[in-house]
Length: 432
Ligand code: NAP
Image 1: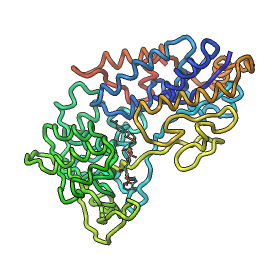
Image 2 (image 1 turned 90 degrees about the vertical axis):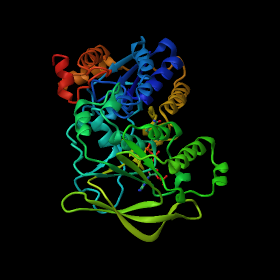
Image 3 (image 1 turned 30 degrees about the horizontal axis):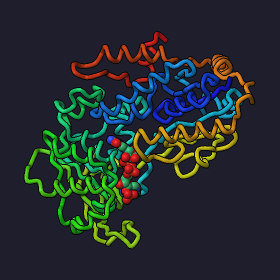
Image 4 (image 1 turned 135 degrees about the horizontal axis):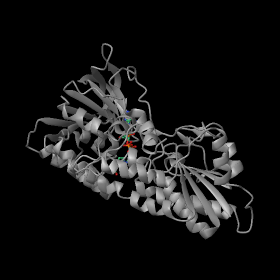
């Protein structure tokens, strides 16, 4: 019997567990470890609460967790409660599926002013991530700025502009719903350092902006190259650009404006003790398609700034780390140590991109461990003994089910669940 530990129970972790089960048949025991007693990682804490259809993939993950060869071991933080070396002693292979939970820094003066938050913090706050439950984003001013032209920037801008009514059926946490309901924000400026042809926004997410109750996208037709230039774009991007062109032609007005400010690079954030404005430099495209400053600057008022410019992985002691992810070759970090998902390749792609990624690494592991070799390691038995000696209280999938049932039972009408947002509330639900 082979023993595998997957660290992180988000999409990458679950797809890898599924792939290892298939690769080793009944000859593997797979433990999915998570620092929280709740599984799903990005699905619970990252995917937008008003995109419930995307979150439905968790049903598939439940099937994996409930299969004979897979166990969930929650409430354990690798790198703090136990080391990678200890895990490698206990398991035939360890696979890091820890995602990319930290915000990349903008690297401009003033970004540490109160009122400037990263998208991981903001998204975590409205999705009930315990680390960000107390974020309390400032909604008292009328202007917000979102930096970045990816889907996360769109998520943040959309959440800022929706009405209470538009959150019906979502699982946005109560504290966020109440705070957003009293928000004074009326203008959300989305800063892109390059142009409409360089956006990283996908058509479905962009299209939603055209159908909001109180908000309307504002796009300047002068930012676009001639329409014939769209023919050279790949089909998905062309669709997004066509949507943006349509927004430029919109003649409707609503109470809230989402202003797409292209060719706009933040130079610094200013304010007296807290953010009041972003100083922006107008850019143009250089020969390689990058953003080149023109020297022309202007200011955009903002009492809230959200940077949505990408994420990085958490380093783990003794694991080589560079440029926001673990150093690896096609998923292999070192002997018996692997990485999958965003921890392997950085924060790109959709949830489904993690599936082939997990299968590829499972194949690598299978090739490195021919049938009939190994089988001396203890796996979960040794892990549980080690954790007990350290006074740790790991949780299992039945514990998660209890938490889930309680979250469903306390949901407001029409909502699938009301998440607990504190670690101690999860444990209290379990009577611990
Ligand atoms: P992303 O797609 O990589 O976009 C990051 C954006 O930040 C880019 O527009 C980039 O501009 C900009 N940026 C980076 N550094 C910057 C800087 N210093 N100053 C100004 N702008 C800067 O990242 P993301 O939006 O965080 O999304 C992460 C992944 O999750 C993506 O694959 C995304 O599609 C996926 N996602 C999917 C969904 C969905 O399917 N519904 C929802 C959310 C996220 P440049 O291009 O100029 O570098």
